[in-house]
Image (cartoon, rainbow, N blue to C red; front, top):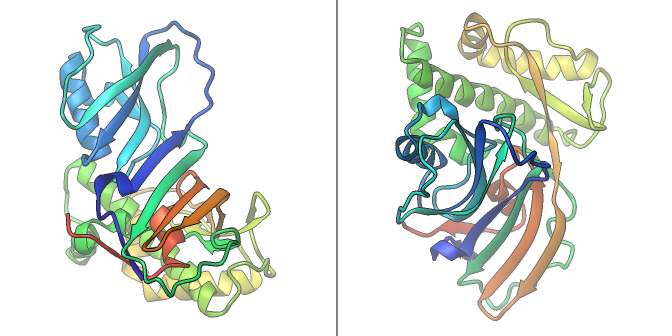
Amino acid sequence: MGTLRDQLADFQVFEVFDRVFSGHGEHLYVLVQKQDVNTKDVQRSLAHHYGVSLVDVSYAGLKDKRSIAQQWFSIRLPKTAQRPIDKHYSILEETKHDRKLRPGDHQGNRFHIRIRNVSKSVNLAPDALLGPLPNYFGPQRFGYQGNNLHRALNWVSQSSPRVKRGVRALYMSVLRSLVFNEVLASRVRGDTWRTVLNGEVLLEHLPTGPLWGRGRLSTSSEVLAVEQSVQRQNKAVCDTLEWVGLKQDRRALVMHASDVAIQQDDDAINLRFSLPKGSYATVALNEYFDVKEAQA
């Protein structure tokens, strides 16, 4: 149907962040606009520029590399007041606060997306994206061409040998996402992902799936049967997630876009919408549009 990210400006992300800053404290907060660079690469660059350890630079959430994105970072006790100069990012605002930024401190993300090379025969429904959407973890979570997932599964198959802490954390995140997506896919096949079944655990009135870890599943009845079936099919992965000591958690199976605006030109569609934190714009788009990623 069309092409996504044909140009860098075709995919823009704006972090929704409503913290009231104290204006003082040991943490410098900077609003960064980045382009064609990973959030973690910006984190490393900021740590180097401000002369601090990597652990002293924090962010609320990861943003797409192939995009223009705005997001907040915090730097604890920076050694310089000068702003960095870098071709991949710039600082738009800065302030002080008495607490560090932590993952999930933002409310969500606002997206401005342009899909190009759209067939003129496409007649987009005005309420596209307004309905409930399956809250899959997107392909970004699994790495380029699924490489992070392949490495994580290989690590599990080798009985989880010792690796660096950061690598293990990445593998845990990928493996948890895999199990969650499998549970959601099972619910989608049964057309129950939007339905509150017997034994459901709700999060903000929405059905949920497991972020696997140690401890008993909190579901029962019909929902427990689905999750135990996925557990049996992914026994080695689930056993590993329990072995490393992660605790069971839950994630909503359903996401809802808000503030949706759509404009259709002859050969392009412009979309603006917001998603809650942790939800993926590419997943939302794929529910309504047959798009392919442009070659970077």
